[in-house]
Image (cartoon, rainbow, N blue to C red):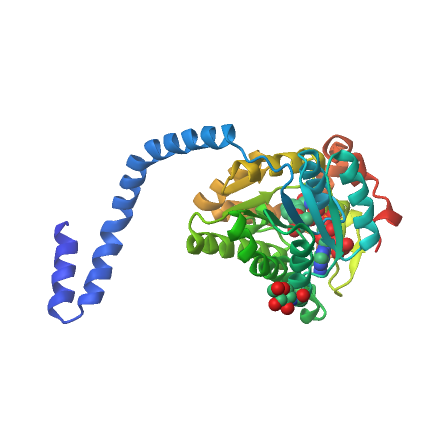
Amino acid sequence: MDIISAATFLYHFFTGRAADAIHAYLNRSLPPLAAAALLFILPPYLFIKLLLFAFRSAFSEDVAGKVVLITGASSGIGEHLAYSYAKRGACLALVARRENRLTDVANIAYQLGSPDVVVIRGDVTRAEDCERFVNRTIDHFGRLDHLVTNAGVSPMCMFEDCPDITKLAPVMDINFWGSVYSSYFALPYLKRSRGKIVVIASAAGWLPAPRMSFYSASKAALISFYETLRTELGSEITITIVTPGLIESEMTQGKFLSKEGRMVLDPQLRDVQIGVMPIRSVGAAAEEIVKGACRGDNYLTEPAWVKSTFYWKVFCPEVLEWCNWLLLVAGTEISERNALSFKILELTGLKPFLYPPSVQFPDLTETSR
Ligand SMILES: NC(=O)c1ccc[n+]([C@@H]2O[C@H](COP(=O)([O-])OP(=O)(O)OC[C@H]3O[C@@H](n4cnc5c(N)ncnc54)[C@H](OP(=O)(O)O)[C@@H]3O)[C@@H](O)[C@H]2O)c1
Ligand SMILES: *[C@@H]1O[C@H](CO)[C@@H](O)[C@H](O)[C@H]1NC(C)=O
C-alpha cells in the first residue's frame, strides 16, 4: 500500500466509512495485482489446458447408439449437425416447424448410418411444445444423451427503423427462451445419462454488428445463461457453448426476420451485411461442432479464426464499433447499397470466392416456408 492509498484508507476509516475505505483501497491496488497474477497464472493454466485438450481428444465420446435431440434441424447448421451425428451412428430426434423438411433430413440421416430417427414438429417458443418433444424422445428411445439447441432466427433492421417494436420480440422467444425451455425439460434426463448440452450461440454475442442488435443481445444472453448454468451444475453435465462465425445456411442466404416481423429473403441486404467476410461451408462446420461436443469442449468457435475478434473486443472495443460503423452504417441513410462493405464486395468481385454456391444462388422455393 503506497502513501496516498494508505492516507485515503485512514481518512475514510476514521470518518466512519469503512466500506468506502475498502473500495478506495481495492480500486487502487487490485488492477495491478490482478494483472500480475494473470501473467503468473497464464503459462501453467494454458499448459494444463493443452494437456486436458489432448486427453479429451484421445478419449472423445463415441455417440454410436446414443440419442441426440436437435432443434432447428430442418435446414442449415441443424440439418448438417444431424448428418454428422448420423455418420457416427447416433439415434436422432429432429425438431422444427417445417415437418416435410425434417422428413427429408431424416431420410438422408438413415442413409448416412443413423439406426433410428424420429421427426417431431415443434415450435420452441412454446414451452409445452418443448416439454412434448423431450417427452416424445424419451418415450421412443428411453434416454437422451445430447441436446443441441440450435433453432434461431436473425432480424435485420436498424433499431430506429422498426415500425412496431413488439414485432421483434420473437427473436428473444426463439433464440433465448427456445433454448432455455428445451434445456429445462431435458435436464433430468441429461443428468441421468451424464449427457451434454450443445448450445449454438454466435460470435455476434460479442461483436456489435449494426442491424443485428436483437440478435446479438439474444446470443449474449445465451452465452451468459449457459455459463451460469455450468456453474450451477458443476461436472454433472457438459455444456458446449458454440459461437459460429459466418456459416452457409438459409440465414446467410439472406433469410431474415424483417422489421415487420415476417421471414423474408433479402440477398442484397445479406451482401451489405456480410461484405467480403468468407462464409464457411456448413458440412465442414457441422463436423467440427460435433467433434468439439464429443471431446467435451466448454467453448468452441467455428471457424476458429473468429475467436481472435474476441480479443479485440476485450482490449479495444471502440475500434470494433468504429470499423463496423464505417463499413456498415456510414452513408446508408438513403440506400443500404451505399454501405462501404457492399461497395468493396462489388468492386473486388470476390463474392464467388468467399460465398459457397448455395449462398450465392439461394433456391427460393426450397427456402420458403
Ligand atoms: N449461419 C450463420 O452464419 C450463423 C452464425 C452464428 C450462429 N448461427 C446460429 O445457428 C443456428 C442455426 O441457424 P442457421 O444458420 O442454420 O439458419 P437456418 O438455416 O435459417 O436454420 C434455422 C433453423 O431454426 C429453425 N427454427 C426457427 N424458428 C423456430 C421455432 N420457433 N421453433 C423451432 N424451430 C425453429 C428453423 O426451422 P423451421 O423454420 O422449420 O422451424 C431452421 O431449422 C441459429 O441459432 C443461428 O443463430 C448461425
Ligand atoms: C411429460 O412427461 C412428464 C413425466 O412423465 C409428465 O408429467 C408431463 O405431463 C408430460 N408432458 C407432456 C406435455 O406430455
